[in-house]
Every structure is written in C-alpha cells, then in structure tokens.
Length: 185
Image (tube, rainbow, N blue to C red):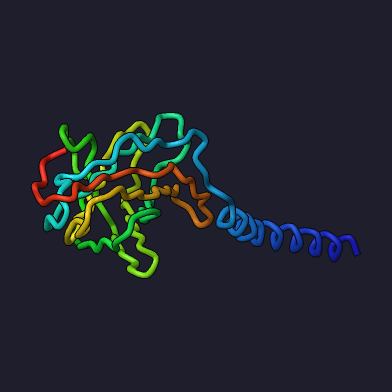
C-alpha cells in the first residue's frame, strides 16, 4: 500500500510540475504592460504650412524617459479637429532618434497602416523604441488641406505585450496658412 501511495504521490507531483509552467505562461500572456513614467509629446511641426502644398511631412517628436519601465512599440496619430480630411502615404513614414533638425539613428518600422475611415495612422516599431530615447516620426501627407486653419492630431502610445495599456499623450497642433507660399516651420 505504501508503494501505491508513493507512486500516486510522485505521479501527482510530476504531473503538477509539468502543468505548472503552462499555467504560468498563460498568466504572463494576459498580464498588463504599461508605462511607469509617461512619455511626452515634445513637438509637432510640418515642412510646409501653406494650403494645398503637395507632399509635406508632419513630424511628431516624443521623449521616452529612462524611467518609463517599458519600451514603446506602437503609436497612433489621428485627426481630432480640422475641417478637411488629410490623406497619407503610409509606406513613406519615417522614424529616427532625435528631432527633425538634429536627426540621429534611424528606427525600424515594422508596419504602418492608414485607416481612412477613422483618420488614424498606426506605426509599429520592431524592435520597440528603448527608454531614454527622444525620437521623431515623420508622416508623409499627400497634400496639405485646401484651406488654412488649425488642425489637432491626437497621439497615443503603447508598450509591447499581449495586453498593453494605451497612454494618450495629448494633441499636437498644426496651423496651415490660407496661401500656398509654404515656408519651413
């Protein structure tokens, strides 16, 4: 009887030991990832402010602090205010460390998608952007709006993971002149 009890006990322990890592892996897959210190939207600018100017680039500079706790995997940028729809060339999106006037190392973009219905551009990095990095994303618009005015673009960031907690950084403002003189900001 003791041998039977020991066999059952050893079998149960080995079965539990084999199942336990699977259970832990499922728990880890559902865990929430988040920034412990907020990234910051530093600046938004365009290469040309004039109405109707073709192929301008809109730059969004973000500071990901050292204490953020997580790298940055994805950014969404969507128009929140503005009279006209702005269309983009998603395949011409660029990203680099630094600012538009002081470019450093390029960042690798895994995927860029443009959802015309929600007017949202989604940029995914691979590898994710490391904490302690100031970087810029440059979107290539097909054309500035036909008429001048103020446009607001909401910027939201996501850490990597299966259950990332999004963080809205705020709105960046671009002002377009009613003329087509288009000078550099």
